Amino acid sequence: MVVTKQLFENELYINKIKKLLDTLEIIPNLYNNYLLAFVHRSLVNEKPDLSPEHNERLEFLWDAVLELVITSKLFHDYPDKPEWQLTDYRSSIVKWKHLADVARKLSFDEYLILGKWEELGWGRNNDYLLANCVEAFIGAVYLDSWYEIAKEFILKHIYANLERIINNDLLKDYKSLLQEYTQRIFYVTPEYKVLEETWLDHEKNYLSWVFLRELMIGTWNGSSKKKSQEDAAKNAFLNKENIDKKKIKK
Image (cartoon, one colour):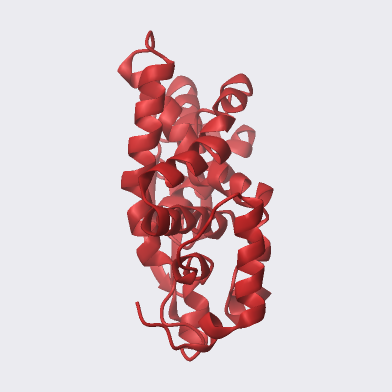
């Protein structure tokens, strides 16, 4: 990739990324994709002269790399576990909340390059945005150093948290918790309705509602359908004691 944009010629930022890679014990061949991993689309929307693109193409790669590493490791580490339990383990490792925790632990929030409005909107503290950054970084490692180095990073910084997740009962997400609760108490499965809206710097924003039959029990905004539904489920589950049983029609 031929890079001529200002951000990728900024010596101060390049040196900052070099220090991060030194800390992570990653020896780069090229720096371009590592720089790109921290560029949010809001910057490109506001100041296209600074960066040639944002990190979403790098995110595209991470699924295949992460799934292969995690699936293989789980298969060999837990030979007595059934397929459904291994699937739960894998889901807990790759869910965005866990990846956001990984990003904070590695101080990725300090390296993000955001547009003005995303910065003002606390984007640097946005779990979903941080999780996407980890995904893009894995894509960058894979492109620059291929599979073995990406595998080493995933095992050291992501897979290593599995025992803590299991021991602290963090395997289930809020959609699963809410569904189990409402089926047990009300014999009803939650339904989600999603509205796509426009927002600052022309990004998509989604508003999700959670219903038990005709009663709305939770709502939330998010930058993706998945995130808005998960947060709406969280909102409903944490306020489950306030659900009016009388209003849930039979």
